[in-house]
Image (cartoon, rainbow, N blue to C red; front, side, top):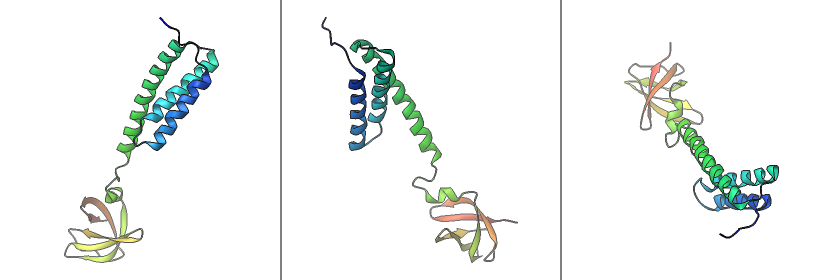
Length: 147
C-alpha cells in the first residue's frame, strides 16, 4: 500500500474554496455543500492537528454528506415557504383591499400596489368598501365583502 502523505488544513480549505467558486460558475446548488464539507475538514485538521490523508478523506466524505443532506432540507423548506413563485396572486389570499371600481353584476376591480386586479364577487360592492381575497382563478381574484 502506498502512502499519500500528509494533508494540511490549507489544502482542504483550498479545495473547499475551489468547490464554492465552481458553484458560482455552474448552475444548481450542489458544489457549495461539498465546499462546506472541505472547509470544515480543513478546520478540524487545524484544530485537532490531524494530518492523515485517509482520516481526513473519511472526515471529508462524512461532512460533505451531512452538508449536502442539510442543504437539501434547507432548500426544500425555502421553496415550500415561497407560495408566490410563479403565482403572483397567491400572496394576496386572505388580504383585505379597497374596491377601486364598483363591483356590479359580480365583476369589478381592486387596487393592489400600483396595479388594478379584476375581481369577481357574488354580491355588488361599492367603490371604497373593503373586500377580502378568498381564491384565485387565473388572473382574476374572487373576493367577499368585509363587514
